[in-house]
Length: 88
Image (cartoon, rainbow, N blue to C red):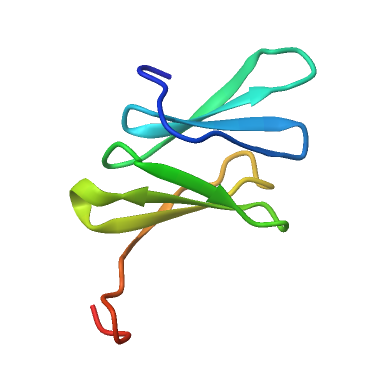
């Protein structure tokens, strides 16, 4: 992906890197790119849970994108961030 930046996270032998308007995935064994999850805006940060769900903060659209990295063709779901107190 274009313009890698920010924190990278590793899960199941893959490195996930925030890039311009997406999150790129690299195979750590080969160093090859395995694709990019396209997002509506550029993520500021990423985190991944033990079950493979990746969250990407999208401050430009006030959303958080959630991607199931265990499904190769997974489409990101962008959700509005909740404000303090549990409201949007």
